[in-house]
Length: 140
Image 1 (cartoon, one colour):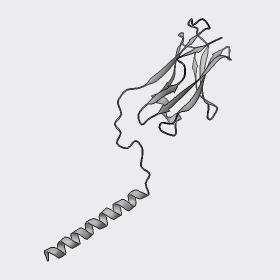
Image 2 (cartoon, helix red, strand yellow):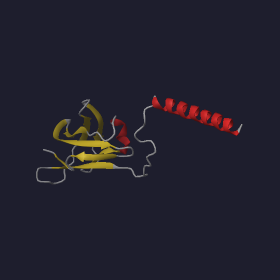
Image 3 (cartoon, helix red, strand yellow):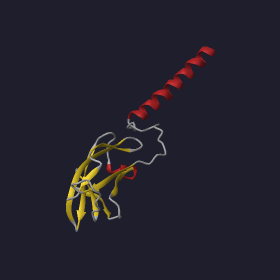
Image 4 (cartoon, rainbow, N blue to C red):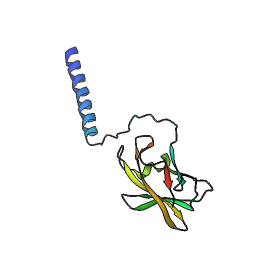
């Protein structure tokens, strides 16, 4: 009798194990499941300078997603030559993890582009990071 009970219990356990595995097979595994993120909030700035590397203040800065050619944001003049151009707040701009995307940053004076540069960013499970690009933008 004990042997039969053990066999039935083993069969029930195997049934549940295979059922659970079958339901998991159809679900995509999320890359970031179980990843613990810090409370850090990352942001990236760019400074605007003239040809002699002196601080200069454009009227605005425009950031455009080069893959879609759509502007992400236009930052109005802020009385400094430093603009926050990207942060963890723009993580939704990325569809894939650890895949760099290019963004065009333009300095505008009287609605005319007076300088531009390309920066690359990517996201991981928690934050954005800068892949390449200058820390300053020359405004002519």
